[in-house]
Length: 193
Length: 193
View: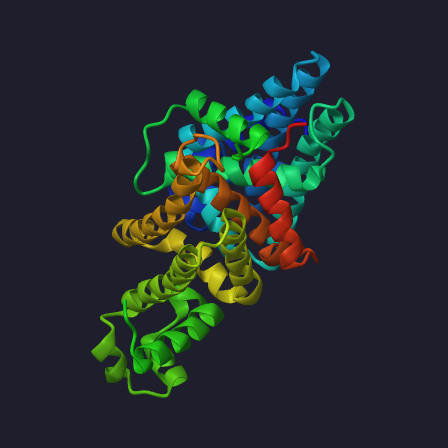
């Protein structure tokens, strides 16, 4: 997905409105208003509110994937690559709390077809991360485990810490850098003595 | 929470109705109907639909806590105790899909006060699991890590596998026993070679 300036501006506005009102209460008119464009302009670039929501998630994950590709090209260490992913995700929870809540919570109310589309986005995302794990297994950095299970463990752990520290009713005052180190250590070494 | 037969029967009915309709669409009348009692009977035992929902979650987690206590009294190994917890949780996802979805999804729509009450239930639950980890650290089975972080890793991982295998739009055909072993192995050993 290559975005032009107008699309980028519209998605930024959509992010604001979804964060503030959630998916279901947000309207395309409000998003147009926030972006300072006519409603027709939005429909020129995006099919529907659903399309806006999906494009927004796609653009967020693509930014992360671009970071991953850069790390791969630069030959960053496995540790740096994984810590960068953990950190980006925690930052999203901490800094875009409203949008994170909308994505996590509003998913429940989506129809099955849209849930499936969003689940496919999730799968594309996990495949990118799986590539890093596959290379680390080939390089002898990781045990010979299922890369798919490994992604599930990492994302489940990051979401649990992200929710607990930054979205839960009793937020905890733990810095992102500290949380990244805790997650990476437990993920790599496990808990056994 | 000690339940008498009538309360137990009402909560079983509430579980059916919440699983079928979700928290917000369910009504106390339907729960009374499902239980085969008058609506007044429900209000004799429970204050509100909210109280029914909270009591249901409490009774589910207390059943799990009772299992934990039994395991501790019998002197079960750390491995057996943890595998039993992972297994009970995955079974809940796999066998009570509707209720699991209602608890995960409807949480979003609750008011802040009720979210806090439910978060406190979660904390009581994590404290029980933390006890097992503390003992395992004292016994030299686990590294000297934060028990709180350890619970977050375990629950985040179990939820991610439970969701992916049993609740997601594309459910996966992995048995509970197999999933328990995968989770326990990655949790204990980590992914590093």
